[in-house]
Length: 142
Image (cartoon, rainbow, N blue to C red; front, side, top):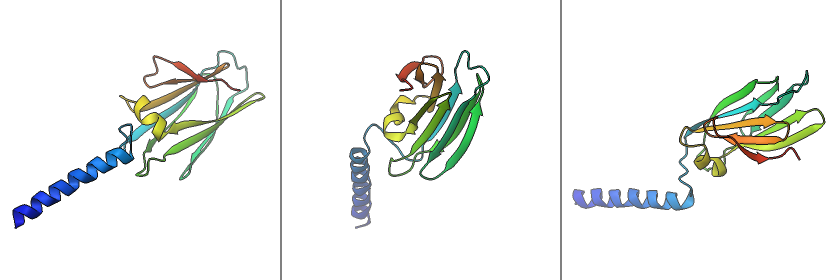
């Protein structure tokens, strides 16, 4: 009887894993740590800093004023529900943009293999990289 209970327990655990994999697509696993980094990539922003303010549902990271070449970075862990999301508001001169610096459903795959999500903010828009070597423009300021 003990052998039957052990086999039943193993089957239930396997079934649970299969169900979770269907509920959480794109190889999402909760509790994984990521690093997010936002870099001021302006080539000539004079004395005006890039102002950034980031927060999630659970935490407010506060604001920073980034001079040319400065960065703001933080680490996060994904939550069980797959809803981890950090929003940042950027302001430079008259431009203002709010964007998802980290959104688990979007970034759990594209920030791999280093679990690093980097943003380079330039005059013409926002560039994404997971290795800080290869940058791809993700969206413009407007």
